[in-house]
Length: 142
Length: 222
Image (cartoon, rainbow over all chains, first blue to last red; front, side):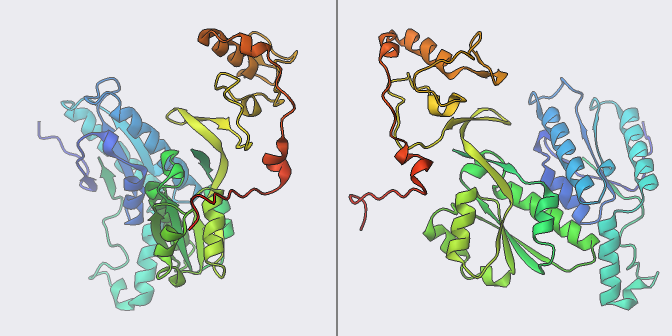
């Protein structure tokens, strides 16, 4: 179908969304991701019965924790689609991309960049890209 | 097992507000099973703390370690070489582990990362219920293995009281009347005559009424 979706999305493949843990989501933010969305099979269609339901609960746990530490729970979401539904996949990617753009950069990434700049002021040069180690609006999808 | 619940992260952050390094110390036993203080929860809390401190612009070294048990000296000794690298410890073990860690490392501030709740069983994932209060003088043999000390709100040894309605306790419609459970169980076992036997006054000195308890078994001591 050759559909396009935002290049800011980095796909991390897992055998089932039931494999995704709160820790995986938090690590993404710790390393600078601006948003994470977990894309699972449609509810009721899980090959392992309830993997996508487990993922949804973990996404909710991560959302609450991120809210409490000031990163922002709105940066995490759960999506469900059929594996053959490419148009919906691109729609979710676009929606997440827009959500991340409107939310702004991950404050952890901003803090990491400032620390790096403080340690090495030459890293702030636009040529070296020290202030923005990743493209703006970077989102991870699973 | 000992059931614990996660402490709100705001509370943990407030406890360690001024430290420059902290070790998040988990336990592989009960708190792992009830998903409050195992290796995974250590990772989640440490990650959240790192992100919090980064946003505050503070450089705080957050370490992670999970011991087999925090209530045994030999496992606690495993961190003796590394604990000095940290200003404080957040223990995700039960209250026993937290206190024992503090006892073994007297110069190290140890803060609780969980709320220890009770000794209970897993009814289903995410639901635990109290089953034992450790009264030190078990009477389950006469009550069909249903504990009235734990499960009766009044700890009645000869029940039920007048607050039992349709098998439920008067404190809540969600709480079973322990004595209804005992009668049902004895009936199922064909031992209803046991119900007719009055339970004598219980010796509560083995319970908390006797103060902090200690068990000494000379047959095991070396």
